[in-house]
Every structure is written in C-alpha cells, then in structure tokens.
Amino acid sequence: MRKIMPYLAGVGYASIFGFSFMFTRGALEHITPFHLLGLRFLAAALALSILHILGIVPIRVSWQQFAALLPLAFFQPLLYFPLETLGVQMTSSSHGGMMIAAIPIFVTILAAVLLKEHPSPLQYPFILASVGGVIFILAMENQGGLESNLPGTLFLLGAVLAAACYNIASRKAGKSFSPLQITWVMMVIGAIAFNGIALGQHVSADTLGQYFKPLAFVWPQILFLGILSSVGAFFLVNYTLSKLPAAQGAVFSNLTTLISIFAGVTFLKESFSWHQAVGALVILAGVWGTNYFASSRKGNLEVEI
Image (cartoon, rainbow, N blue to C red):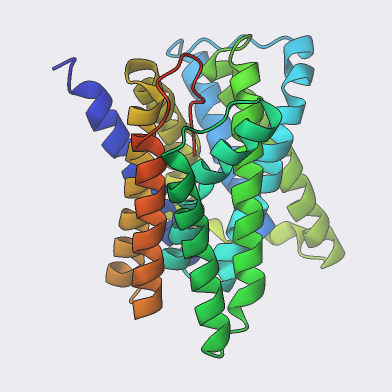
C-alpha cells in the first residue's frame, strides 16, 4: 500500500487543482475576484488554525521566519491567484487549465537563467513545443474574432510566470523551512491581503454590512477552494515530491489540464474548439517531454503548481 500512496496522492492533487478552475468560475458569478480570494484564504487559514489547536498539525513560525518567507508569498498567493482568478473570469475553465499547464516549462526556463540549471538537449524541443501551443491558442482566438479573450490570456500568462518565480523561491526556502511552515505563511498572507482589498472595496461601495452575505451562494466553492485546493492539494504535492523523483512526481501535474477541460466541458457546458484541442495536445506533449527527458543529475528542480 505504501508503494502506491505517492501515486494516489499525485492523482489526488491533480484532480483537486483541475476542478478548482470550475469552482472558481462558478463562484465568480456571485462574488468579485478579490472578495472570493479573501474568503478562500480566510477559510484556509482558519482550517489550518483549527488543525493546530486540535493538535493535529503543529505549526511553529517565528516572526523572523515569517518575514523571511514574505518574498515567496509575494509570488504566491499575492501575485499568482489574482492573475489566475481574473484570467479564468475573462476566459473559461478549460482555457485556464490549458494555460496553467505551461508552468513547468517556465520553471525550467527560469531555473536555467537564475539557478544555472540548464535543460538536457532533448528537453529544448519540448519546451518550445509547449510555449508554441500557448501562442497557437492565443493567435487562433484573435483570428476568430475573440479579442475579448486576449486580456484574460495575458492575465493567465502572468499567473504562469508568477508560479514559476514561486517555484524558484520555494526551492531556496525549502532548505530552511518545512512545507507546513511555508503553507501556513502563504495562507495567512493571502487572508490578510485579499480580505484587506475586498474590505476596502466594500467600504468604498458602502456595502460593508453585506461582506459575508455571498457565502449563502458560494460556500461550497469557498470550502473547496480554501480547504481542499489551498491547503489539502499543497500537502499532497509535497508528499508526492517527497516520495518520488522530481520529474516523475511533476508528471502528475499534467493531469490537471485534462481534468480542468473535462470539468469545464462536462459541468459548465463550455465550448471546446479544434484549435483548443490542438493547442492542448501540443502543450501536454511539451510538458511530458520536458519531464520525461529531464536530466537525472542531482539537484533537479521540483516543480509545484
């Protein structure tokens, strides 16, 4: 049973991340992006706090450690999640899933530039293929008169870059901090920042007394995004990568795209055109090849989403 647990965990986190696009899309029909993010990370921080109080997960973070992790928290959640949420709001669940599939590729590129960890020769064509798939989707949608998707696609590209930068920062932080400490700081920073922005928006609109009113409509999405996606999935990611080689563990993230497309088309009745199918296949092929032909030398970057 222990041998298959890492694989089950990999499928689990990919499934949670894949469905998160659908839950985000559904919640945005009733609530603004920053309000959604505020309630999402508040639920995550409260869940971790309750687990700590019950003695299930010990959380020990000093003020010095908290401050040291602030740069990492800037990339994720402060930068990544607003860009991802706005991108999904302006495009679709399936489109968001395909764009986010490029994260491992950008991680590889930034690792080569910033950490001097260069890809193996066989990885280069797959890196170009995955990036080419993203460009192909963008070009075809503009050609088809869907210019309204351009800002959303650019937001999603920004989210990809933010996530890639987070992975670089996370690798360095992982040498001094535990995954639980990193996750705790991320959730607390997200809860403070996004609720601060959302509260400011409500004060400006003179609707502060209605701050928690949307929970009557979006509480299932908040619970899924806050507890399962923000907390649970990151634990599964860390568990998978602690038991499997980095390239092998990262392959499971490819399932996120397939699951997000399935969720969007099946449950949200979103359209799925031929150019999205072609782009998705090219992106997936690039992500797979980049991981499959990864160098086996010690110190390979562990890719997280």
